[in-house]
Image 1 (cartoon, rainbow, N blue to C red):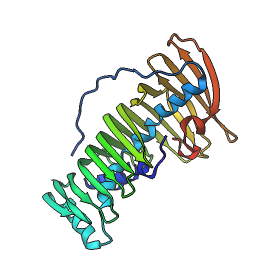
Image 2: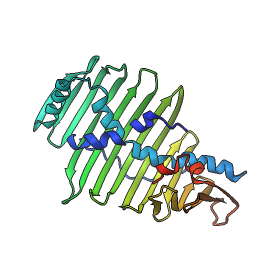
Image 3: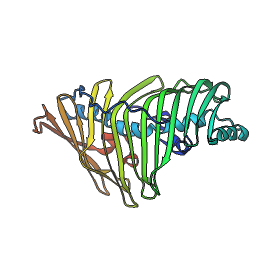
Image 4: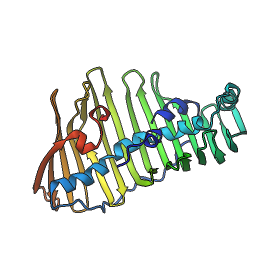
Length: 310
């Protein structure tokens, strides 16, 4: 699996820029058909496919970053240039364009709460190339919350090295309480393609829902449910109830399930100050009977350092 700076480029970016930026499209809520197979010869092979499937959790949260990258990637070290962009964004109604750092242009249109940006052969000072378009909107939600939406249309960032990120689809972000950190991310359909060092990883997320219910000094509670399509087919991934991440970054507590067309893989997550374990069981034919079992660390199962799990 690719763990790239580009993938990090495709959650931090939008968080800082969505507040200045039209709304994501609603393409319905039809349930995708589960088509991917889970290997049934041994639990380790099933876990490998499960690891790819659960990567949709981080891919979904990472989607926030594409928007911010669009605003920041083409900026020069020229305060007048940045201020000019900011002034366009803050006008009550505007329709304008600005030259990219090296060549091409970005066309803007929008209002106080929304913005649409189209990148026309935009080459940045660092040699990266941006194309496609995006729309974003932000509004208040109660006294201490905020609601944001973003949609991407064939949005592509290609670095000078040839590494690239492609994203297409919609996401909706709701921060119910800025103080407690309660938030949700949802999408009808979202496609991403990351290329690094000549290797490409593509996924499609559908009916995506990720919720952080509580964020305190001692723990974070969350849950998720989504369908992910990879090269192997479509899988259904969900947490059974809430997952708890302890503040000491020692892993998660809870249950995660990955459904393939032929079987269901269950990961029962336990953690303490010494270890974080994923106890695995595979139900072949989905008849409620456990056929294979195994165990691995959570870092192995999620292919993520423990500090990144949430």
